[in-house]
Length: 527
Image 1: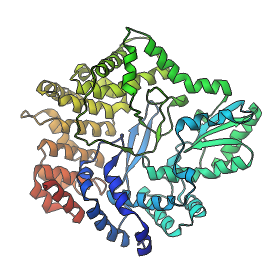
Image 2: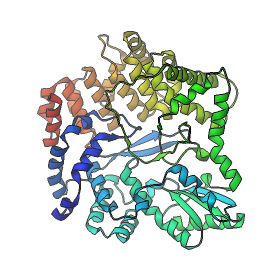
Image 3: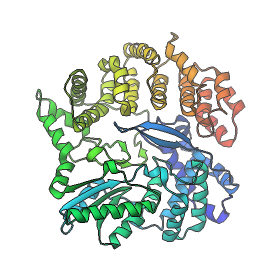
Image 4: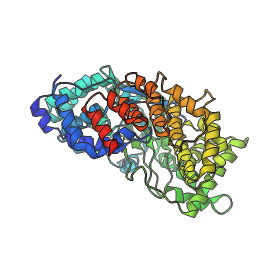
């Protein structure tokens, strides 16, 4: 499908290019190949436009499975830069005529409490959709988008793009702002129909809250919601469907902060310092909140999850962060709490475990920057017991490695041991490869260097490409093997491998560059 000139003129490709090269998400390492092109947005836009005009878009996305907090895994789609730019540009154009509430969400805390003021809100029901983003039907989505906007050419192009990148007629790429807009639009007919039927209902993505005057009314409302959701080819998640009395619903919202307060008030008098870890409004990526609305972060006010959002890195990747002494003390306290919980025999509730995990996730980067090496000996346990914290564990390794040669030597030795284990997921290996490649190269041939070489031939393209980039940083890559992997990793990861080759042998990279965008990347690396 070729994009018509009239449609291309209306797409803000320059803005889409800038956003796609400057935004990332916390679930995957930053792509140095895209960072390198960030200053060349105009040139990239000019090179992409004729490709869209010729229908050259829509490579099948690479699917990765990411650990969730004690709740299994979630699939995320890695698209080519060309497809990410077109996806964002098309949705941005369509969103211009969508109702405002489908484009900009209310704060999550406001969503959770908004129905408490409803007339006769004696009961509050909560539910959400099972694997929502996996089962959004493209035809139904296109019909709803056209009914709301009339943007038929853009919607047709979007439908074609989704089919190509997903490889089927259902599903949206996860962890992308454009998918949030599409997802909110797709589910909105359920909200509208329930409102017209007289129910007090509000939504946040696929998360529903319903206020009822009686338990019978609440049951009827949930049944109506289930029927309406099924009309879209979806099902409610029974394991996450509850009805509370209004007072108990309020208590459920405060359960995490109350447990947090109790933790802060216990101990040796320094627990108040733990609050210093959470004063900057940071919020982890989340798809639907934690169990029973447990927030993923601590703060003076409850943190809101960022649903399928891009997380903009507001500071340059090489910017140095300086922590205050009290923050370091707080991080050490958080580490002590985690160790005591893991070494003790007592059982902990889901909420207590969530608090400890949250504390640890914020503490690990600080511990690394502070040169505190105690967690190094626990890296295997951390990766096995707290797999969702793998990005923070990787950051700890990278930060600690920058504190001195002693820390780097200790890390290299423990990495050799880690890579002998067979218990880590592909996603965890990707983050470990990122960390290993970020440590200043040593003269000694450590075993994890050989592991990275093996990963270049791994059948998983994301791991192979990340390992290739890591070897490029270390200047230890076998250029012939890296070059051979270029076509094996697929279009979504090819430029990352090329970036790795360029770090070791710029001339070899030039000789295998496929198109003008790849040559532009290499030219940028030379400057």
